[in-house]
Length: 262
Image (cartoon, rainbow, N blue to C red):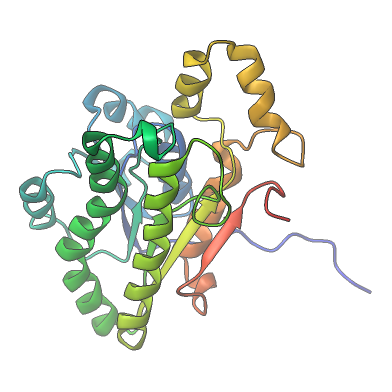
């Protein structure tokens, strides 16, 4: 006789996790999910007011620390890292979706996308990875990095996503390189590749379209499951990858895309 009971949710009890872009969207949902899973969370974002409201949404404010952080500022990242306790997890969530082809992407747009979507991860890794490796060696437990990639560009080509797709492909290369370099030192590094997620960022793009209602229908139409993903569809995968339940998973690009890439 088989049991129909669901497996217990992944636990992050005793772990400290740093999350970027935690004020809204997938970063915010992931911060709250990590707190619910038992983690202590350092939630960072450039949006101070939105970040300040996080504590009101969790029954565990005692395990939440917020910090205003521009992930494009190398000195600011290093300064924050110097104040942190030993980390067990890092979720690099900050990013930006530039719309257009290569002909629509001038040098400023290219540089901004590469800086925010890719170089910010380099900054965070350089700043916090030594401490994460030291903590992994001390405890004998693996540390985990989750990098935000996307199905768009990194897995499948989409029109008008030239800069975004290029940066997300770079994130997967970065992820695999870090995973290969530090697998024997107790570090796991994976990339998360969501489908189209209903976030404030997506709503901004929909509302900026000439016909917002049609733009929303178009986004939904490319999801075979017939709906946009919610942030709560994505956050459990972040928790899982940060947890010890994912202890044998590293160097992977994991899709949560509603069937787009079937």
